[in-house]
Image (cartoon, rainbow, N blue to C red; front, side, top):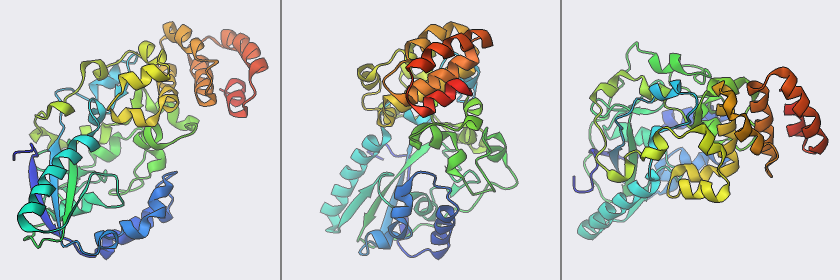
Length: 358
């Protein structure tokens, strides 16, 4: 395919009461966490026809982003940070949307049909459409799985008023396997095919804006942006091949960045390092929160000076996690000595809590 997509499928746009019911249950259980926009757009999200009543066909395309690195091996080097495989280079929203727009423009020109493109930014449930279009199926971890691409691919969707013959929907091929469920460090799957985002490391390190609950900090390990565990263990990945799109190939400096270097990032340095990257949208303070949790989990006492350097950061979120990291890296007596001086200067109650009860 000229734009470099791995595969394409077509699905009839129609109501799907079962899928709408699963969405309703997900939100009713509070499994969307602080992502209030999901609840706010539930009605439109429940059906593509609610979003665009004139749509007749969904054209769904898969963009491979597999890398030649082992996501699980990176977790063993505790003095480095782990960034999710999908975020090791350019923001996929921009890369995939550009390709979709060119295809959609061609289709509109050739057929006269109206078109709209989507890449994970509108209230459109793209994974169910991708399954209907034959690209893959939603596995027990709720992500899409392909028999030819494994787990490592993005999906982009073109909705059109054109009538195009639909493909056969893909069926579930998970069988009795539960590797993705068993590997989750935070038990984020209350049942197969269900995700509680509030316990998901990807949600906690990317979407969650505030303090991360203490029960999740140790399981986060050295993950500083996202988590790939449930994807990485899927046996269907044996069919995955390295991505050919250069903009999605991992940048060397992001494969295993040293925590020491990440701790030194001020806002401008953060923006420079992650320019055009999806990591940038988390903001420096949230990212530093994650890095400090990784530092606290590292067991590397040589990181103490770098953590101390941000212990009086302007952000209370950063100061709080610096206190927690120091409580893990310093002997109790040394931490107690620091506590006195920092508590005298601290006014934020959340930060004080971390010093008082790390």
